[in-house]
Image 1 (cartoon, rainbow, N blue to C red):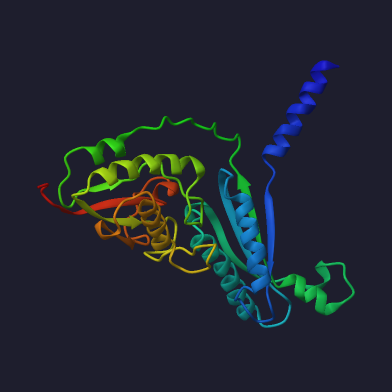
Image 2 (tube, helix red, strand yellow):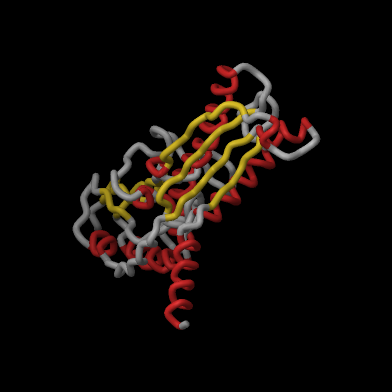
Length: 278
């Protein structure tokens, strides 16, 4: 009996771990712009999946039964592309989007419903399926390395660029995790002492199309890289670093590192001037 229980538990864990997360976005007739209420629902779904290790995302667009086949294929593809753009704007890795396809129309008799308008409304949609990695990757405990602090304490010259390592931003937002603030406090202490060093704080984002900036989910503005740089600027000012020694700039996605997407959600310091101490 005991082996059977263990087997059933394993089967349950297997099915739970492989469970796909699904979401549907509905559109107005002949439109591919996402309605405001549907956009809000989509952002809630993105918040739900942002901490999941994702294997793939599939996005399929559909239309109702009206319109020609060619028209419906184009419209359904535009709807799928609109959803992909929201994922991209909110720093989700495009390489995980294995299918972004317009499937055309859904026939009215697929859904069991008497109200024809309601049927068509339910067919004007995009289906999103998120498949988690299975088995889940083990969480790696990375030791905090004081590389950034050592560099800031060392010999600096104009043009040096220093990555503020171990500063982690939440996906789509410009504020740091609680643990990252502890790291930034130590960086601030060093910069307060090095009064002859002037620098620019450069913010970066990941995953957007081309060199576009990402959207700050809090303000809904497409200036996330600027917002991240200003967050660090304001934090350092609050900790005693003189404002006239610093500038901040948003670099959008001009300088991707080519590794894991989260590494591009970063802030760097560019040393612009070093004055000789009197």
